[in-house]
Length: 111
Image 1 (spheres, rainbow, N blue to C red):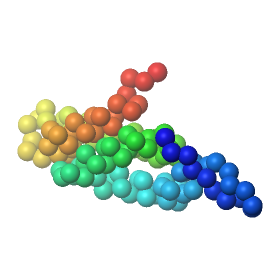
Image 2 (cartoon, rainbow, N blue to C red; image 1 turned 120 degrees about the vertical axis):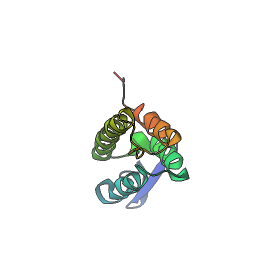
Image 3 (tube, rainbow, N blue to C red; image 1 turned 90 degrees about the vertical axis):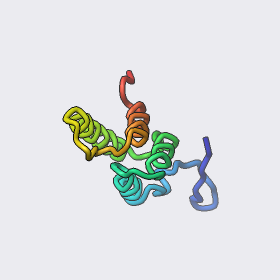
């Protein structure tokens, strides 16, 4: 894990990415990136999955809650589409769905 510092007066103090607004105002850029990727069927899904998993604990709590809620909703929609045999699947191909299931493991069945 990386250690981050910010200058405060004459000193440098340890800080977090969230404190440095690395995710944009109120996590806006993290949410925008996530929403762009959710439902895609390209390499970006796997890259997004790895990025989310690597930075999960650093995201603001509100961003984690939003990602959790929207991934759960899309998995439910995808389950329904697959059960009904639809051609269009909200989470894309099987490999894309598997990436979002791995993201879901960040909170699913955790105590």
